[in-house]
Image (cartoon, rainbow, N blue to C red; front, side, top):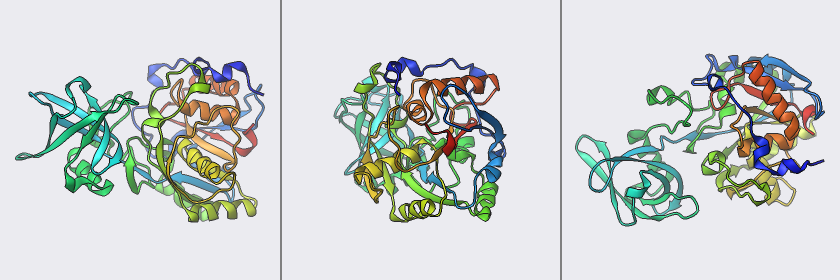
Length: 365
């Protein structure tokens, strides 16, 4: 039963010591801590502590992990501003015909009609044009030259000129050191501006062990964008709307899910992005999981009825974020806050490179 506070953004806040914000992943990846939530009682923790490597013993043959195969673009570009000086563009999403929604810095110096210059080599600059301001996000619509009209061509340009857009709480002294650290082992489809971070825990060694045990892996695509990490601002969550993100749930993945459930296995999402992609595809099929490709802006918060997933592997998320709302929808807000305090007491590492929580099928309320 929902509490009145479940619909207030301020009810999803907590205090985190700075030294618990992870600055790099564990090495090996599967050595990260894992908090296992054992049942769905809201008034008791009923948890245990393990390592990601222990998933090989926790999961059972016939279970299915659903991972996000998006690849993080090197989406941060340094550009020269009109009249001189340097600025930055962060590519957010394509708008068609070579236009991209970008967050600009300093935005006040990027007015409609302005030309921005991107250094592609010592003697070669590309001219980018500011088309307009996007009123919904405060970003800028940027026109790239015609030869960069497709997502693949843009990805190639970004590989040449861009930097990985790390979260603001990660030390950026050495961008190149993060180029592979900030990608999952499944990252094959360029398009994200942030990593689906739960997947960072799955090392090649663990993936092989899981497959040998009979645990299957299926893939979806959700290109993580503004809708995932943009700070929430509305206190009344009934008025909250997320920015849309592009997803693809293929027929092959749907067959794997159906077969898993028919065989008595459990469907476990790796990361909140996998949850949103699967549940959005099911909603688009009016309660039947069908192939889906397109944009979605599904907000999952307490009161949401899950139709596809049975459990979730997820990181520890920022206060007052849409990701905390999703976790609370699975296990309850009050219990989520208690579990986070337990994680802080036990020195778990938080956010993108941090440790993880396994919400088992038995713990879902």
